[in-house]
Length: 317
Length: 240
Image: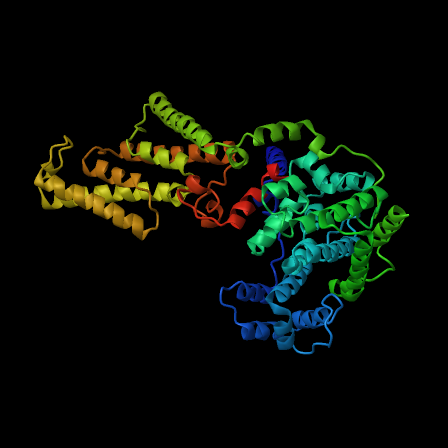
C-alpha cells in the first residue's frame, strides 16, 4: 500500500512538473529503424558522401520505394519520372531525402494505442494535411525550408498517441475535453499539466537524435506569435507551422477554427483568397498522392480541407 | 471516435495531485530552468543542505557517542551539494574513494611501521623524514587507486592523509568513518533526489543525464549553439 501511494505521488509529480525523463522512462519508445538512423547520421555529417547515401537508401527496400514513390508524386512536380535512387538523390538533394527518411521513419515508430479515443486514420490524415499546408506556407515564407516544414508538421503530434496509450488515466480526460470543446488541445494541456504535447514531442525527437533545429520547431509548433518573435524565428518555418497547426481536426472541423486559420494565413503570408484556395487544392492533391505511404486509406474529401474551402467561399461571398 | 458516457473524477482533480503539484514545483529540477537568477537559489541550497547534512551527522555523533566526525566529510559534503550531478558526487565514487583513502592510508602506515620504527608516526603533527615518506606514499597510493578504480573524489585523499598521520587508530573510528560517509550519501540522496527533484545517481554517474545540468554537474563553461539552448528552453512552460 505505501509503495502504491509512493508510485502515485511519483506519477503526480512527473505529470505536474512535465518531467519527461520520468514520464517516458518506463515506456519503450520504439527506436528509429537502424538503417534510417544510419542514413540520418550520414546526412548530418559535415562532408556528405552522396554515393554512400544512395547506397544506404538502395540497401533499404522500404525506404527506396518510399523515396521513388514520393519523388514521383505531385508533391515534387517533376517533369519526367525518376526510376533510380541515385537519380532521385541527385535530383532532389539532401534536404528532400532527409525529409522523406525522417518523416517515414518517425511515422513507422509511433505506436498505435488501443484506446477508444485514438483514431489512427484521423490522427495521421490530420497530420499529413497539416504537413502539406505547412509546406505550402513555407513556399511563400521561407522557400528553402519547405521540406523541414513538412517533416516537422508531420511528426509534431508524435507524443499524443504515446501519452494517450501510457498515461491514459491523466491524458484521456484532456483529449475528451478537447473533443467536446472549441479550445485548442495545447491550451487544455497547459491548464491541466502546465506543459503540452509539443514539448513532449520535442523530448521524443531528442531521444531519436533528430536534428536540434527540427526538435525546436516541433517544440514550439503551437506557440504564440509573440513567443516566435521573441525567439527571432519569424523568418523561419515557425510561422508556417504555427499557422498550419491552427487547422481544425477532421474529427470536429468546426467553423470557429477554420475562420481563424483563414485570417491567420491571409495576414501572415499575404495571401489572397485565390492563392489560399490554390494552396488547399495542392494540399488535397499531395494527400491523394502520398496518403498510402502512411498506410492510410482515402475516404473521400478530407473533412478539414472541405471545411476550410467552404469557409473561404463563404467569406468571399 | 467514441465518447465514454460516465464522467469520473480525473487524477489531476484530486487533492493529492494539487498537494504534490505544489511541492514538486518547488523542487530544484523544476525551479532552476525557470528562474531569472538560478545561481542565487543554488547558493542558498548549498548553504542550507550543507549545514543540515553536517548538522545531522554531528547530532548523530553526539547522541550515539560514536566517532562520526572527520574533516574530509566537509569537502565531500560541498561536492555532493554544489555539484550533485557530477561524476565525483555519485554514491559509488564517494564511497569507494573514501574506502580507497582508508586503505591507502593504512597501507602507507603499515609500510612505515615495516621500514621505520613504530614511533615513525606519532600523530602529533611533527614532520620527520619517515612521516614525509609515509604521507607522500599515502597521497600517491590514494590518487593512483582512485584513478585506477575510476572514482575521482578529491576529498578522499584527505582521508588517506588523516589515516597516514595516525589520527584514525581504532576499529570503531574506521567503522564510524564508513557509517558517516554512508550517512552523508543518504542525506545527499534525500536532499538532491527526493527534495530537490534532481536525477542524482542511485549508484553510478550517468554522463548523459548530467550533461544538461551545467555547474550542478561541475561543467562551468558549456558552449552551446543557439538551437541547443533553445532545445533546453523547449521543456520550460514559459515558452508557450
